[in-house]
Image (spheres, rainbow, N blue to C red):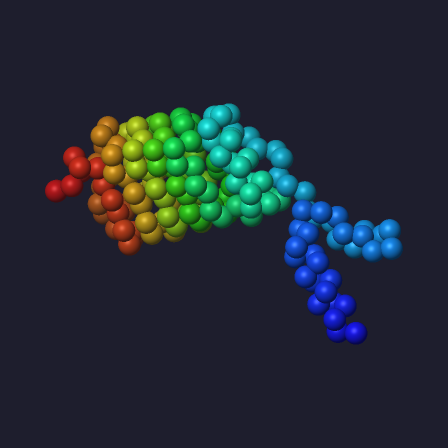
Length: 162
């Protein structure tokens, strides 16, 4: 008799995106995917939609890792709704403003290489941040080192290295 629960577990694990029925009765129904994304930038919106589909994300807080490298993103408006993000790659985009990132209080790693950043001040409010990549942002005002002292790894643009 122990084989029935084991068999059911294996069946459910392999059919996560389908309803499972036994004797015409639904015994498992997957949670619905997150559909309400409030991001105006088409690059950010597309990246979020892809991640939600691929990772089967049902709520904004469930998204912990996002790679939007080279997605053509100009604006981060809307990313703040994903407060569970811990790892975020926004490299190789056209981002100028970082204000929306202050809502990501759990953020631990942030890659912003090769963007159009100017003001680093919103980054100072990310208390959990351990890794920050800022290379290839020629217009960036050099961050105040004491404001980023808690980082384990910091990569700066060439003009900020002394």
